[in-house]
Image (cartoon, rainbow, N blue to C red; front, side):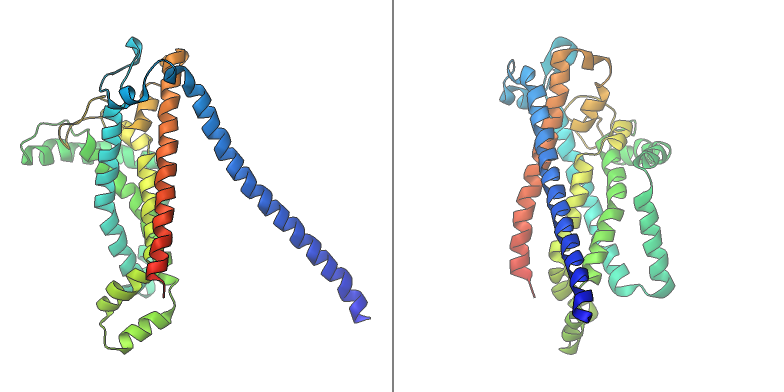
Length: 306
């Protein structure tokens, strides 16, 4: 009697499992198809530009004037690289050190308080950071920091954007890094401490290596957010399509290039194609970076595995 009751249940569970597996497979294929569709659409809409202008010429030209059919992307590329590199250089050390404190040193209410504060920072919309930066960071850079280095600046520019974007992405990197550290088994800590290592030596030589791939993924996420950031750079970078000659100079990034010319110039076919080509460049660069990072991450996991 028990066997006859269990048989329908087993059959139903197997059917549910097969349906779930099918839905998951469809979802995976849908994600791939969506990515391919986006890329093909961008490529197709970029063809009018690519048929008239050389890619090398556009990537190396400094002249951006859509009204004169001049499409030089070099200033925006340089500005994007400056902002991404500076933001990560400022944000990554803070994120890693804060994650170590939360995961390994903070206890009780203090750990809850700091973790909650980080979660709140991560949930704040980027435009709020931009608004606060206009009131606080821009005057600070323009009136105090730039004169300190003998530069004249309005406060809008590469350094201001980099400072704010470092603040924007740091909470995300902290949260992921904390998860990577807290997911490590306690045996790693106990074994290291048991052979006479100090707590800091355990963190530096054992835990950071074991959690390295996860922390690396957190850094990649932060880089992706900075590279594709739009609203904060649009508010703070100054909107001048020129190669920055200093960190205090105004500039442009690839995403802000789309935003600044997205309005009435989008009605001009060749300008529309140029802006869509900028989007294609963003997608390709981010994909290549993520693909290379994935290969490096796999290598790190094989090298640092315990």
